[in-house]
Length: 317
Image (cartoon, rainbow, N blue to C red; front, side, top):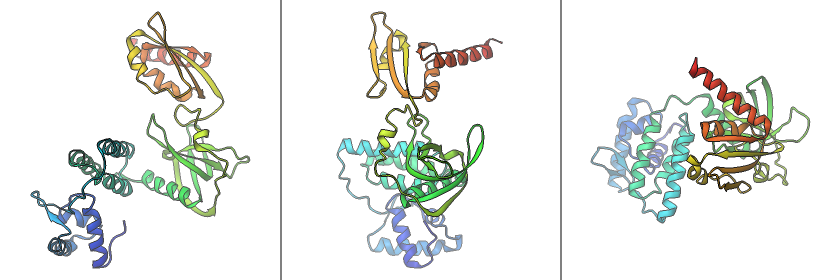
């Protein structure tokens, strides 16, 4: 949102904010990026809008536009509320765009859910000033994808730093760590195989004017069909045995359409997964502690066993 330069722009911006939340005149002045000496102008705008019936004053001294009657049924309202909560948890750093999206979702909710969502929005706004490079990165990545332009950046992987000029095919959120990833082809490398890039590892991001085209035969859902989270690769069969103590918890987990889950006569639960590489599974498996045993593949079993040995050594020394 740019700083309004004329009274008309200022009034429209005030109405836009008040349609999405409750604010005092001082809050509005700050949200609009206006200097403190414009507080009186905002107060006069509010007075005119109240006379016109477009804004109402609340007992708290704040202002808002009268909320529209929601047309959502209870299930739809819960879905919108859940979307707002997930967006809140994903947006670790403050971003004006995220806050705007949260507020637009919030205004659609019935009163009980709206009150909770408004409190979350206010808490999120308290992060203002914490947003930095990653917030700008997300904006540039979104623009590159939606505008069909090439994105250039320095990528800091765990082992090296490399220059990437990315044709973004789509953006995905990892359901396990809530991190955002851009999937596409690095035109500085040969071949047309898409790769995955975590936004948090991008530095010196620049939006180029060069256009990129997403192949018509590229299907994002097919590309991710074998991924446990976001990473893809050659299919690997993983076999796990969970103890009887966690049988019900295992049955509650959505393991994917191709997973096999069978409770054995012994009380153990045998789970078979087919994933595009097992490395993303490791944190999830370790989270079960001694309640799960990896049967295969041998590489995963050895990796998990080594991790448990290191943890035991740390606590037993």
